[in-house]
Amino acid sequence: MGGYSYNELGAIFAMQGFSGISLFSVLLLMALGLAIIFGQMGVINMAHGEFMAVGAYTTYLISSLTESFIPAFLPYYFVFSIALAFVVAGALGYFAEYILIRHLYSRPLDTLLATWGLSLIMQQSFRSIFGAREVSPTLPDWLLGAYPVTDLIDIPINGLFVLALTIAVTLGVFYLMFKSSWGLNVRATTQNRVMSGAVGINTKKIDRYTFALGCGIAGVAGAAFTTIASTGPTTGTLYIVDTFMVVVFGGAASLLGTIASAFSIAQAQSILEFFISGSMAKVFTLLVLVLILMFKPEGLFASKVRR
Image 1: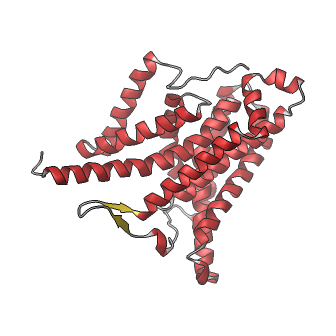
Image 2 (image 1 turned 120 degrees about the horizontal axis):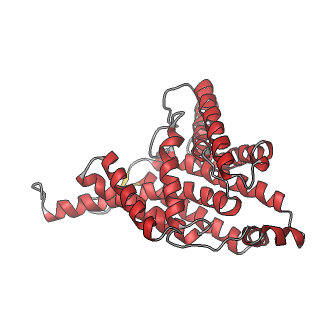
Image 3 (image 1 turned 180 degrees about the vertical axis):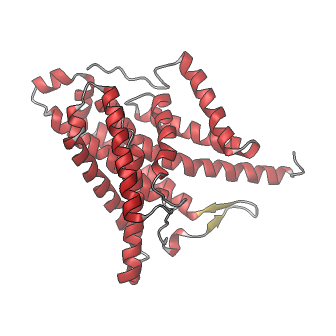
């Protein structure tokens, strides 16, 4: 095939597959936050990509400050910036829910339009603060380089780190949603909001913290994103469509479905990019998803939700 030996083809597919794993990691982190928001609250958050950009810009800002004032802290700042990206994006999400979202529940079209307007405001804020050009943080040395698996296959260390971070966040979300009392309240509110309120659960507080959690996870995705690409004012919009595809295809409010959907979409796009252009790979993947959803509109793993 194209003059490649079998070993070379195997190496190429392995590298493409790991590239798909890196895309899967970012998509899963984004989709986890969006699935929590959409599955619990029914809010179509078009600004979710901008909350990812908040995490990325937070990482860039911490990198610049560290490089300018305390360069000795450069090897350690990145782990700190991940936590700060979660806090900053989560705090902005909490504020957005209190100011805007809480007035629009049970009106999904209005939440779509309102969060789309919020995304435009956030994009312009990024341009005003950081400029229109794309920026990248200075990564610590331990995130650079690659791990040689064979003579033909090298796996980037930053990709391994992002994968490990994704696994840790996914396990944390699983524990929070299925093993904690707060997660029990969230799931009760998802199943029957009226009855949950009747037994004493503060559903408004649950909604607010759920939205903040989803935005915070998007901030972590943004911090992870800086290890594989640069960040600009419109970076979030490049991933929001793929993120919605992951959530819809996996099934709203389904953690397992979100994981399976993110992996399938990322691997399909990555492998197809070896044969056709990146944009055509996205189009072909979208067409396949549409065909599947025509026969299974509830997604891979449907959850029964009563409002």
